[in-house]
Image (tube, rainbow, N blue to C red; front, side, top):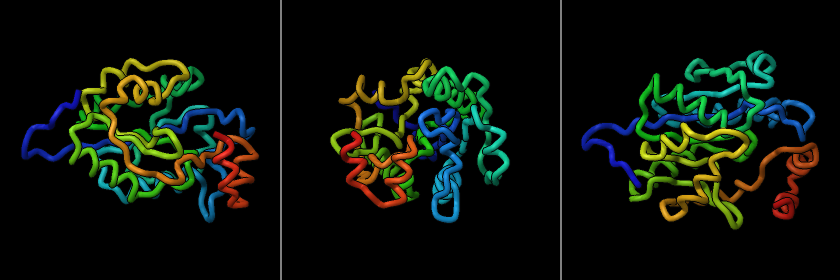
Length: 213
């Protein structure tokens, strides 16, 4: 299913960062939780700026005004998704429509903002693995599964554009698992969805997240 880019042409990699949810289990915008001297979202944005993406799109929804009150790098396009409440699949579809229309990328890396150990080196490894692999998808591997951050080549764009509801990219990873390569992300299972998750992160109780899954 892999679609090879035209030879001798640079591969146009776009970033799609999803931050549109209402953090219902957290009770406050998890995008704005403090992470060292930054917020969770600002940390993620900073790491993406260290990677030479062709385009960067941030999809906002429920807390867009609160989030935009904090600095967002000018290199990042902000897309406001009015129907964010329809779910992550809807946010992916909305972001993909914008990217395809305005940037025509060859591949897209989908990222969420609740994994505090996201780092630029991991994103670069995903892109590098994609360039050396015959697979159409490169996902992050953690625990006994794989998921986001995940890189899809252009042959998967019709599937991403057709996404809807609350189902995210994991649906495609399960459906096309024979076309998925992986890159290790040892702390990828550490994500912050609830106050207990945040407390465990602050305590550096990594065993909590192993039991959570």
